[in-house]
Each structure stands twice: as C-alpha cells, then as structure tokens.
Image (cartoon, rainbow, N blue to C red):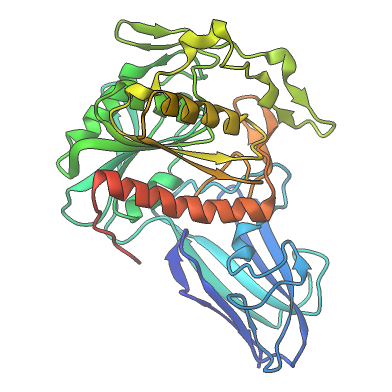
Length: 420
C-alpha cells in the first residue's frame, strides 16, 4: 500500500519537514503535490516529478526531483515553490495565533502536468504549519501614538526585544514577528501607515514615532535591555537604518533590501530634518502584463546634490547586518548596500556586515514564505515586480533566516526558545 509521511505533522512554519513515500513499485514515476488555501480563499499549489528507487520509495531529503515546479534535491521544495491560482496573490498569514496553514500532500501515479491534479491520489497526508508556539502571547498595542502587536514568547523572560517593520505594503504585518517570538524574541510588529488611526498613505517619516515604539518595548517587564534589535525590509529597512543611525536604543539592525539614503519623503527627528532624494516617477516601467517595476525611479545617492540625504551610518552605536538579493526587481539594493559598506570601510568602521545572495529577489522572508516574483501592492493598486530566480531565492531565505537569528543572538543575548 502506498503511503506518504511528513514529519513532524505539526510544526512551526519555518521548520523543515521530512517527506517520504513508500509502497511504490520500483522505478515508478510519481507526482507529489502540495496544496493549501489561504485565509482569502486563494488556492496555492506546487508539484514535483520523482521516480522511486529499487525499494519503491521516494525520500525528498535524498532524491532529486526530475521536474515540475522545481528540480534537484529540494527537501522543502513543495512549500518553497507554492504558486497561487489567482494571479499576483502573495501567501501572507493573517491570523497567526489561532490557526495554522493546513497543507495537503498528495501522491499521484505518473507525471501529472495539470496542477492541481484531478486524478485520485495514491496516498495523502495533511500537515499543520503554525506561526506560534504554545503559551505565546499576542498583545494589541495602542500606546501613545504607537500602533502594532507585541508577541511575547512563553515563559517569564526577560527576552531580547526586536522591532519588526515592513515596507510599502502598509498595514500591520505579523507573520515574521510571530515567528521571531516563537524563536524566543519579544517582538513588536510595528505599523506606521494604513492602519487604524495612522496616516492612510505613506508620507513624511517622524523618527520620534519609532523612538516611542523602542521606549515602549524597552519598558516592558519581559523585555531585556539595554538595547533592541530591528528586522526590516524595503522602505522599512530605510527607516531601520535611520533608527540605527540616530537612536541609542538600537543595538542590532537587520536591513533587508533597503537603501542607504532617505528617498521620496522627508525624515525628521527632533531638530533634524533630512530632505529626501526625490523619486523619478517618470522612470517607472509597466510591463505588457501591467506589472510595475520601480527599480529605475531611484536616483544615484552618490551624486553631490544628494549627499545631505545619505544616512551617516557610521554614527550607529550598534551592529548592522545588510541582506541583499542581487536580482531585486524593486530596489537597486545591491548598489545601496555596497555604498554603505564602502562608506564604513573608508571611515574605518567595522560594525556593518553584508550578506549578498546572487539571483535572489526583493522579498527575502522566512522560509515559511514561498518564492514570490510579483504580487499585488494595495498602495499602488497594481501588481509589483519583486524579482529573483526561484531556487536561488528559496536558498537565500533559508540561509538568511538562520543568519538573522544568529546575529540577533550574538548582539542582544541568548533567547529561551520554545517549540511545538
């Protein structure tokens, strides 16, 4: 009898699984398919083609996929290469506390070119992918001006504190913060526009808002000071770099595909006001499929007239980790990161490191998130290009997620991890 097993059946969304099929005929061609439906009702699926060994077994830890949505030895390929049925959809967990993603794994005879297959599966197995651990808390935050959600690991703490910031998607994004809390970090998912009574659209940035958030987090009895970490992407990484530069509360900053200067909107902090490098909106490219490419709208920060907009990152009191996808289709992030590193070297500073991933795109997220080449961005009411090549991007997510946690542990201190 054919059987597919996936262990563990219930796990954190960023944990790898061991997937194995037994009971096949020797050298039998099969299709293994993964499918899930997100909270908006969108179906995501992936499939790969395998041939069983002489014992009638397929082990995804060992065996190479012959084709399908990926090829080669990819133990988690069925999760990393999930694709939406609805064009331009992005898999992004909304309710991180109360329900997992339920993923169905199916085995079909022969190579199924249509996905999802309409054939009767030889065997099936359901797995749960959670974004929380038992005992973890989610606390809505409405403190002064600060809006967000605080995720506290199980236990008495104190825990190292992290602020989690996303980019132009706006609203409150919680899936990365909840996973960080599951790994032992007290994490504040911080909104800064398009949420509750915050500004409805992205605009001028007041760094004192983010300082207020840092002070709120540091004063929590379960948060261990004296400094905090930040994990941020895109426009959020630009803000995070400014926080690292000017706020003494920040000890470890992870900037994923950000910039080295203030772009588009001014940033103020007390008596300081940094005027932005203006966007070149006339250089935005729209493909024949209506997909927007923003990468050409950023002016060169090396130009003499833009030097006042470049962040003096050498003033940062904490450590900085830059993470870059070299095929970022949204920002010229490799060039921005290179400028930061060259500035640091020129000034004799050593508190900044760079992880640069060839062929990875813009949305470098925890390995729970499948590769996303383009998706709908509500702020512009159009699909936006993120870029990257699927297999290289998936590998970058696995490696960078591990390195982010190591970096935060090193500079904020150890955590008290809990597991499902």
